[in-house]
Length: 322
Image 1 (cartoon, rainbow, N blue to C red):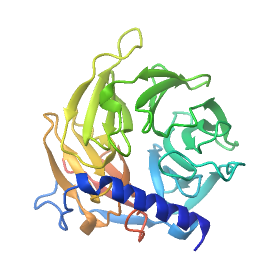
Image 2: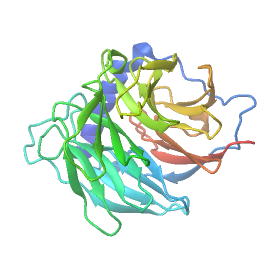
Image 3: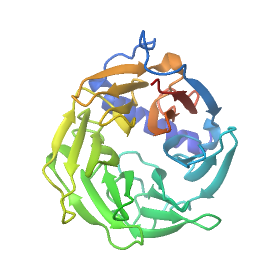
């Protein structure tokens, strides 16, 4: 078995063991009246090459930029399904060092700036590589900010107004931030609601209506932290609960309604502003441990990494109904 698949299998086993007790049985059919068009698997990725999509960012033309966690890669997926590898990150020189919890080096959160620059996270368990990386169009990847090697940087969000990057650490239970120009990240919030309770804590992150929103995988929650006028973190509020294994999420464009990926159960939940939610996609729709979701112009993109199923990492698209 190739090394990438061995490390992926080990990470999958750890994820399954750590989350199984918290996960409810997955439904095998979509909602009776789904608020969306029929979902379609538009791209199948190659598991043997480590193409396990962990996060994605969208361009205005509908192209998707994804991180392949096990492959240590950043790729562009065109609207026609063509996948182009833009960069492969270097392996740690010390092969005995392991990324906390997961045990293998992986590319994680990614965002795209208006000028096409990509910012993404790389976690290796080593101080020389773990951090925030930048990839300009046609350029080479460059680390612009170091992050703690004993943590697991996971989610990444860009505040286009202040040009600040917000970074979640699922092991340390923190949200840090750093300018897009780079530098030394500062811990912005270490609220107890961000902490893990056995596996991974704070995970996905978004900037929305003057606040930082984040998910906590272990606790199954969505959290909101206002950004004060001076840039400091305001008082955290829990906006939704009962979402076991939540990974990433994205706002639909309808106020504070959002879609959330539930990794272990292979589901996508539609979460309403009052915190209530319904399951709108399941494995019957093609989900294989969904990791990320993004919305642009009413079209929804969902990536599945197949961490547990080990069958079909893919990208699903569908349209939200008016």
